[in-house]
Length: 331
Image (tube, rainbow, N blue to C red; front, top):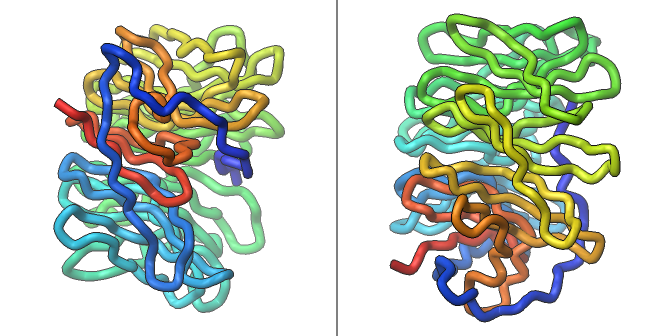
């Protein structure tokens, strides 16, 4: 199944003084779970709560929830060794993937009241939950039958359970994110290429073709239906894109001929992600006014920010350095 690969990158040496006139940020190091040495974030809600995963020993990682009031909490597993949190909504419900005792992956929903719940599968052995909206609807991917490696995007709700969203022209599909209107974005993988899709409750699944590109993958959708993602170009360097709800595309451009992968978009069209020049990776912020900026240039101190992962409506960014980080705008 398709997963966006971060890889192992050296941290690029960058100017550490915030750019004149640019938004600057304070940085909160979210730390690690007991026994760990590194952590990484994946999502943030409008309360400033962050989820991700942290080492708990030299081999295993557990999903965590970090809140401003309580710090970092271990969310546990489904009976196996590892778990990873991929999404959170404004009610503090968390989704992700966790090993079961039998070694298969389970898609989980975690709540403060009920802990970690296994959402089941579409008939196969494993599933992964990748996103959740404020209505508690969950999306992800599941194998569809025992012994098969074909997987389909799913939509889960407490009332209807797990729904198979299908695919287009065979192959697998993978749901990545969902907004509060129930619009789902994800990836189609018919053979060896990847294509973006959008699924809506009224229109079903539709493939989105990005201009001048073959393979593409979406990564986030905001409340208004704006989608961000990346597409492979003829140079084989991925370039980030923004797709408006009306279907128009624009490129995020490049810094120093670097590839870039957007990972989050706010309601005000601030985009965060990861730029990948040949010399190493760094997290970026894109805005209409200032274009692409390195997050390392917008903070004071050496944090080695190699990826921006998500952004909330207040402009708070969750990012990764050695540890998961929370960047808060300085007003």
